[in-house]
Length: 166
Image (cartoon, rainbow, N blue to C red):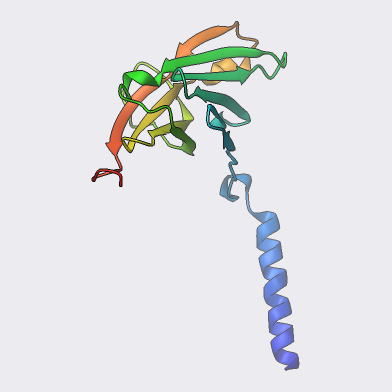
């Protein structure tokens, strides 16, 4: 029994030493996204890059998807994103779901640089899901950039309901 305790203790010390000496690039990063919604509006946060995020709201009555980014130097909102999701959900019932995710868009060839986050909007009646990208340039966060208005980018759509609702 004493040898098992000694081996287990040695293993714990080894794990602790390795954990303390791992370089930062090898330690896993945790990204937390939040979302909350009511019958009329949904709000979430989505990561843009290291230390920057956007707060995004979806108005269920109008279909307005709006996002804002705080300037890290002034604490003021300095970037606003807009898009109306009724373009993708023309027969909407006004009931939406929204979630945020992470994606690595380095493989996409586009003139727009993209954030690390992606927004997913689903309309409950049709079951359609649409993915929206966020234009983002790291220089926005590195300087006291002036206020800008940008548009979310529609990526793709998918159907999640294959039969009529009961």
